[in-house]
Amino acid sequence: MPPKSKDLALKHAIIDVYREQMRLRYLPENCRRFKELKPITDEKLTALRDYFLECIYPASENRDKLDDAFDRMGEIIRSPRRLMPLMTIAFKSVWKLGTMFPSAVAAGRNTLEAYLETRKIESKLIEYAQKNKLKPEQVSEHEPMVKMVANLPEEEMVTFRNEILKLFEHLSNVKLIQATVEIMDNSKALMESRPDLYHEEELAGFTLGHDVLTRGLELFQSLKKSEFPIIIRGIEVVEIDWYDRIKAEAAALGGA
Image (cartoon, rainbow, N blue to C red; front, side, top):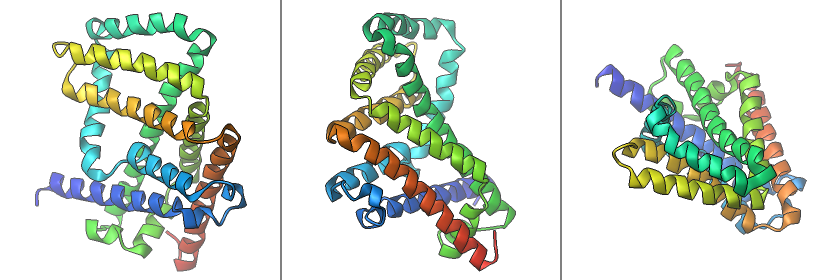
């Protein structure tokens, strides 16, 4: 297997093992451990877990295309000819959103930043695996996985958690997200109508951000307004508990 194929196999293995940890910690039976989430039904907790797995942290087979798509989006920003049509829609959006416009921009930015934070964490996990000469099949074993995650810098885990919480706080503003999704619908339609300006990979990157907000809107529309702060606080306690347990287990094993 060529070196690049080995690196890709390791990256996919790390994505899948970290994603499996996310699946496990958002299982309803684990969420039931926390008093903060007791008022939320199993059906709604399952919807929250599915949102994480499908939108926040998609499976490895989808990630290569998405990583490339986000990288390609930077080319649009550096091209005035391709950026201007989208900016025109953005300027029109100011009038539609009014005072909500800065919050809409922040929601879009948090979508991107949450995704970038996942990539930063993955790069640290890959560095650890390479340094310790772990093979793809080894990273999914429990003990190496625990030591690998425990080795992540705590400040980066806190940053990732905070970006996720900020994203969910924006998603809980249903009126804002409804308007933002409508504007993104218009932007997406423009990109689809101009294949001479926007490549398929760039559209895929935009579509990811669009899907994160659209699915998030659907999630919060399924909740009672009184449940919004419960879900957001619940995410925080689940993430803190998971990381604390990983650190404690790694210490018992003899550290990372």
